[in-house]
Structure formats: C-alpha cells, structure tokens
Image 1: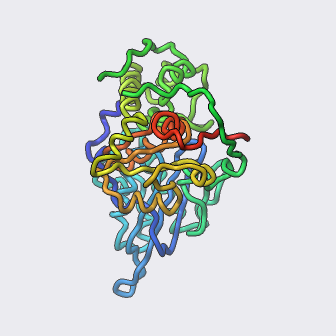
Image 2: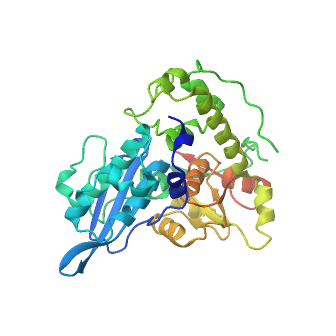
Image 3: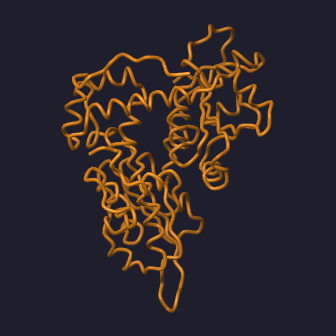
Length: 176
Length: 185
C-alpha cells in the first residue's frame, strides 16, 4: 500500500488536527499504546448533562508520530461530541474514522488505537495495561510528552553537568 | 540548495545500512508507514529493506527509498546555523526558541527568550502558539532536536528549524562568554 493512497482528508487531518492537547478538568482519561515504539494515544473526555442525559461535551487527544492515528483522533473527537458514553463505545474503528473513509489495510490498526483510547477513557476496566503498554490512567498520570522532556525524567537525574574549558569544537551537521 | 548526494541504496540494503545513510529513517518509517520502534512493530538491523517491505503489505521498495531520501533532504533543510539564528534574532518577528534540554542544563546556560520544554510549556505551545511562527528547537549538541522538530511539525507547525550543533555551537560560534559543558553519567 502506498502512502500516496491515503485519503487527502486524512493527510490534512494530521497536519491540522482538531482537539489536540490536554483537556483541563477532564472527567476521564484513557491511554493505550506502547511507549517504546511511539505508538501512544491519550484521550481526555469531559461530560455535560443534556436533556437529562450525560453526554460527551468535549474530547481531546495527544498522540506521537503516526499521522493516521492523529487524523482519526481528530475526526473521532468531533464525532463523539453529544453522544453518551454507551453510544460512543458502540462506535468501531472504521466508524470513528468517519469522513476519512476506508483506511488502507496497514492503517486500520491506527484507528483501532483511537478506539482503544476511547474505550480506556470511557470504560477503564475494559483496557487493563499489558506488558510493555500503558493502560488507562487518571488525569494525574504521566504524559506522552515524557519522551521529549528529558529535564523532567530519569535521564536528568543521572546526568551530571561538567563545565568545559577550551575544548576543541565538535563537528556538527551540515547546515545549508 | 539541494541536499548532498547520498550513496545509492537498493532492496538488499540492511536496515543498519539504511540508518547509517539516512539517520532519520526510523522516524520516517514510523511516521509514514507505521513501521519501526519496538520489538512488535520494529525491524532488525540485519533485515533487508526488501524483507521489511515484503512483510509490511508489500510496500514498494523504490517508493520507500524515495520517501527516505525526501525526508532526509527535509531534515537537512531543518538545520539552522548558530550564526544564522543570531541574525534571525535581530529582526522582527523573532523566532520562538524551544529548549529541549534538562532543567539542570537550562539553569546553567540558555538562549535569551527561550522557553524550556515542560509539560506546561508544551501545552502552551500546542494550544496558543501560532502554527505559522518560526520555531527553533535546540538541545545541547544537536542530537535530539530533529525528533522534537518532527513532533512539532507533525502538530501543524509550518516553520520548524533546529539549531545545528545545539547550544554548544552557539557558545562556540556566537557567544564566547557562554559556558560550555558536557554531561557525565
């Protein structure tokens, strides 16, 4: 399957995704994926009461790397607004991809990642953490940003800063 | 200016060789094909490109190579020299500087006007910074900045650059009064 076969909407959705970032005051948070391969998806959900029903007011997400997962999450977080948790949980990966249309076979599991994050958020007991993966967690849990935050992590605690004096310059990358 | 010519690679090239020629290959393979990273979805250094493509839906080897080359050229265009950044900082609008080093390094030396990337500032950047603004990412010596730049680009930032050689290059080439350092484990 060629990358160029991806729907144009999918590519656009990954470049300018909607509902990106942490949702302050979220009522539920779900995380799925494997930190070591970058395939991580975290989804925040906030509810509201509407006509006597508890429905999803807003959902946001964070994801690393894969543009398909980002595009699907962008669409899915719009799609589930106004739905009850039960209605949202009934949506399958291909439905969450919505207007993006049928996904190339290699990309279907990217949509399943979104489905898993949604399930983790709305039905935490349904997505227990497995070996090597990140399971559901509350709003106080760690962040996907850990990979880019060496100052906040263990690496900083191990590294010791030593000042240099008149060291020879190191070769850097070619700059144009 | 075009990117420097790279050695030709073919279907029988090992992933080890591919990564030597295209250091950003792992990021490219994951971003575009969802390949690479962990033991379940990754690849072995001695696996050939043809084998990798065959077990991932019969990807077209030539297309994958072309994308690796394109990404490599894009990576090369992402670098900005310390002198180039110094020049950009003298005009308006100034680039927005993102420091991805540790807090300890940040407290030791930093570029004026930069923000340290933390949970809080990341949310601020993703939530409020204009996507069309020039964003320059820097680290200690230019070894991690490309990954962070790729992340920001993936979040819609249209002008993301990396400081070549990191803040160490800045200390060597622009500001001789800035202390240089190394990190000891």
